[in-house]
Length: 118
Image 1 (spheres, helix red, strand yellow):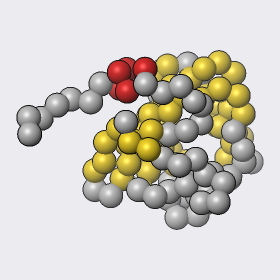
Image 2: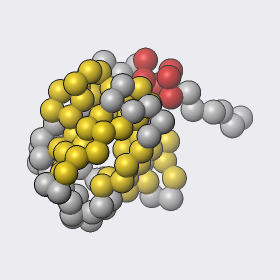
Image 3: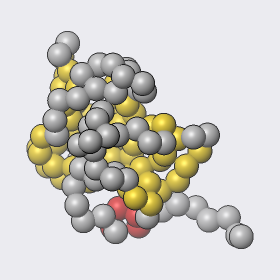
Image 4: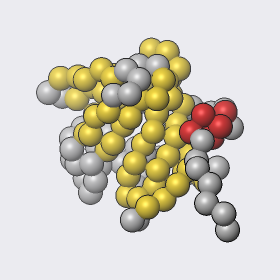
């Protein structure tokens, strides 16, 4: 099979729903995902994994009990494992996420979005 680059812009053009990560690649047991977000997510934590956010477009504020960090395009933040946080996007924002395969986006498999490959 011929190697092909992953076009994040093309993959994001296939995404209609918000807060529903789509897997675009995998490496070393991790999922690389794109997601569109707008509005407030829910307070949650990941007891087993850090949470990696890279803003591709828009702005994202990650609220934490200790304070908040706001990210613009090209900026990233890693929420340490176990830290409760709540992502908020006032405008539609596109993100790249990386996390261990099978990590629920809400921290709870019962309420998490089902991740699909695109």
